[in-house]
Image (cartoon, rainbow, N blue to C red; front, side, top):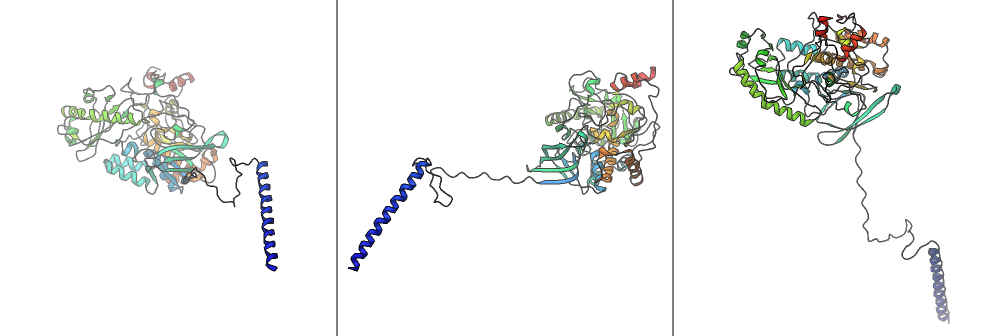
Length: 526
């Protein structure tokens, strides 16, 4: 009897469970219908529900890019031309963190790769040497004969940059510019690719344009100053001729010296009677008067071979010019063998890897040096160099010989001529100095801009953490100039020169600055 009752209870339980299950299914079906669910459009399962199999593969997330390495320094120098290295050395010695990034494949620019080993000294009208600062060691060594060969210049350069990180072969990818003080802009960081192709970022308090093709400044909002094309009435931009150094060996210098009055124990200058006898095979090249130096042991290097319409920002233009030089220089050697005593057995001593670039675009700086500044012996409260040299405009294709526009005594170069206009922290080193096309003929010379670069490097160290360059006051300069003189023997104040345009009218000065007046010829008849 108990078993029958149990079986009845079991049947009842099964019936009740089935009914309950049917009720639950009905409720779920109704809920799905109200929510728009269907067999074709099922509801989204909860995170705890069993995964729904899909016929499409699950997409693989894209790999996360590694962060771009960021390095921060006080001073970043773009380019490895010699002039900017003086700024780098001075800033580093003053305790700043400095890094050099160079778009060229090898460091040294025109000095080491272009082998421009004939150095032009700067002297005032009385013949007094104007070279100051660290550059004096180089120029003294060159004059005395201790620094003449490429390896000797290399050793000097290596000592100058010792301990300063230098990365060659970089390509600038982008420039991060932010608002600066007093309505200016400031370069915060530069992204660049190294030789290995890796993208890197470099942040700095100050940036220095130190290339021969404005690798950094060309990417900023700059104003190009009129060039020689305006002076010569040309529409197309053309820069001063580039040079390719001519290297020779097996020259009998003693015999050469004994035969010409313009040749001494070290240098041969001019000899245009020889050079004008050479007829180039190409209208884009020219052989001017010689600037030749004996490098000892029968080796001679000459600055006299000019190449026109070279654009240093264009790799093909550079390569084409070098190819022209390699074709023409052997022919010049053959001419020298016949035309100059002591050169009968001379041979080629190889070719430089790069050119001597005299000029590229000039960009507006806070103050642009003019011809009147140079010839009037102007001095400035923010002097960073005492300069001198003739206003030497090397030729362009329509005027192959070039022209000399006057000989100043000496003049000052202000910090503002090295500060890029509208940027609080971008400095222009070397041939990037802010000068008119004619004033540039003198301002560009190496000792002038090398001294400026060194002075600026020292100043950056002295004001670090205190104020910006653009905030310097006369009171600051009253401290900075004596510091430069006492510690580095760089004298920038208390210097006076001969004013070559004293008594000129404003109209005359304006025409001088625009090139309408050619000083050497005008002053004879004034």
